[in-house]
Amino acid sequence: MHLLWDFDGTLINTYPMYTKCFQQVLGKGVTEEEIYGELKRSFSHAVAHFHMTKEQELEVRRLINQIQPEEVKPFDGLERVLQAADINVIMTHKDYKNVKRILDYHGLTSYFNDIVTSDDGFPRKPDSASYAYLHHKHRIDMAIGDRELDLLPAKELGIKTCSFQNEHAEADFHLSYYHDFFYTIGK
Image (cartoon, rainbow, N blue to C red; front, top):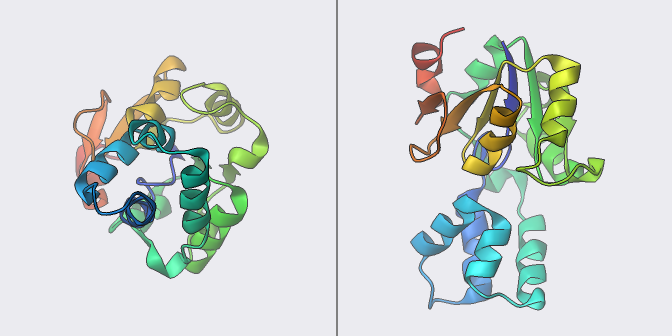
């Protein structure tokens, strides 16, 4: 199976740390639950929702860039799915340097045949250009993401979709835990 993965919230559980960064900038007047919910839609959505100034947004980005790889973890059961796949690729809005240092720290880099990041110049999701590039190169069977935004480009290209920890996203499959991958999707 050839799998296209989102990074944040799909491979690596980064949102709890991102939530802390937002709360540090926004202050205690906003709950972590509210921040987390808005972040799960998208980073830019959260910035707009909380009416953040450019300075606040830049401060959150600075704090996020200071997160150490040991402060974020891969989701349980992920490595078994990566091992079973024939090809794994990533498409993320995160920059390559930070993706690589997190993957390296957790010993996951060797599982990925290709990594497309914000550094590659593709339009942001839900534009399908980056997915089309990866699909043409690797014949993707399924895209896995935690947000609707991650799945829309795959749907546009006729690629099967799997929503991770988001039952509200329209997808061919829904997973709450990677331990259920083979039971839910098979190989």
